[in-house]
Image (cartoon, rainbow, N blue to C red):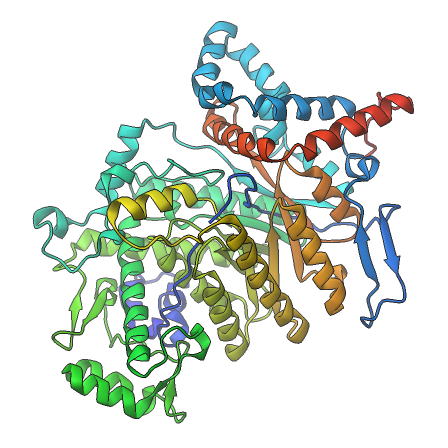
Length: 623
C-alpha cells in the first residue's frame, strides 16, 4: 500500500505537514511486521537519553592493546570500583539512595505509598511535604520541577560522561473507575456501540472494562488515557518542548514519545488487528506450502503454489490480483518483506482496515462503518506523529517511540517503521522499541533489520525486557488468547541476548544499524561489552548505547560513561504534586528490584565506608 495513495485523506489544503509521506507508508507495500513486547519485575528496562558524552578513561578501565580486533582495544570495566562509580555523588546523596532503596523493600510502605503521601501532605502542609519529598523519593528519581531547575543535574551528569533524556513526567491522577470509563469510551467505535458483536473483531483487540485501567500490573511505563483531541495536542506540545530542550543540551540528544498520548487508541487497536490478521494470512499460506514453524525471514511463498491455494480457497479477484503482475516482481516467491500492500487505492483511512475472509475469498471491513469524526481523529494522530518526527530531525534529536501493550503494539511498530523509512535515510533519527519478553521479539527485530538493509536506511532500536508482563498474562488468560510472553525470565534473557547479538552483527557488517541497550541487568551490560570486544566495535563509533533510569544503577551508568561508552539517564521532571503517580510506580518497581538484589546497597555502603576511612565524607563532586 502506498502512503501517497491515501494522502488526500490526511492533508488539509495548504498544510505543509509531511503526512503524505508518513501516511503513504513510503510508497511501498504494506508489510505485516507485527512487533510486540516482557519484563521481569526485578530488572526494569525502561530508558531514554540525550547528550554528547566526554570520554574520561580512568583507572576503572583496563585496555588490552594486543586485542585481536583491528582498530580497537578491548575494554574491560570494573563495576565494583565504588570510588569511580559514585564520584558524581556527594555523601549525602549516597545516604539518600540507601534510605530510599531500603524503604522500597518494605511491603506495607510500598503498597500504601499513595495513602501515606496524602496523609503526610495533610499533616505537614504543602511546603514541608514538598521539602520532604525533595530530600527523599522526589530527589532520588526526579530531576526538578521545570527546564531551568534541572539544568545543574544535567550538566553534572554530562561532566561525568552520562547524557540525559528529558521527560515531563506529569500524569493524571485518575481513580480506577475514571480510567476504565475513559478507556471504554475511547476504544469502542460508534458502530460497535450501536450494534455490539456484529463486526469482525477479535477479543484481544477489543476494549475490556476489566483491563480498562491500563496502569494495573505495569511497572515504570507512563500511561495515557484519551480525553479529547485538545488533550492530544497538549501532549504533542509537551513532546515538542522536550525535543527542543534535548536539542539545546547536546548535539546528539534523545527524546521519547508514546503513541497512545497522540490520539484515540481505537485506531491503534483496529490497525493492530488488521496487521495481525494479514500476518496470520501469510502464515496460513506458508503452512499450506509446508513452511510452518520456520523463522520469519525463511518463509517464502512459491507463486504457483500460492495461486493454486487461493483458487482452492475460492479467493475472488480482489485478492487474486494482488499476487500477479508487477506487484510480485520477477523472483517468483514472496517473503514477509515482499508481502503486498493488499489494499487498493483508498481515499479514507478507514478503508485500510480491511481483512481477508478465507471462507468467502473476499476482503471485508473490520467494522461496518466509521463516523466522520473517527476519520478525522485517525488523521490527526498521524499528523501529530509526523510533526514530532520532523521537529526531531530539525533539532538534531533522535526520537525513541516507546513500546506499549501487545494489542496496541503492531500498529505502533508499523507507524514507527514508516517514520524510519522516511527520516532515517541519512542518519538514525527514529528508534523503535522491542520488548524481548515477547515470543515474537526476534522475528520482529530480524524482519525490520532486513527491511532496512534492503531499502538502505538506518536501523534504530531500543531493546528492553518489557513493562507489561503481569497485565499481559492476566489479560490473555481471562479473555482467552495465547500468552504472548516468554515462559520464564531465563527465556527472556536468552531472547534479549539473541536480539542484541543479531543487531550487533548487523552493526559489524553494515555500519547503518544502531541499538540502545536499555537495561539495569549488569550481566546484559557485560555481555554487550564482551560481544563488542569480540566484534571489534568501538564505543567511540556511537553505534551501541546504554540507558538506565535516573536514580537507579549508577554503578553501571557512570563507569560506562567514563569509559567512553554512550550512556544516558532517563530524566523525569515536573512539579512535586503532579509527579506523584510516577513516584508511586518507582516505589513499586524498586521493591522488586531491591529485594531481588542487594548489590547496589552493598556498593553504596562500601563507598560510604571508604570515604569515612579516607576522610572524604565531606566529598562533593567537582563540576
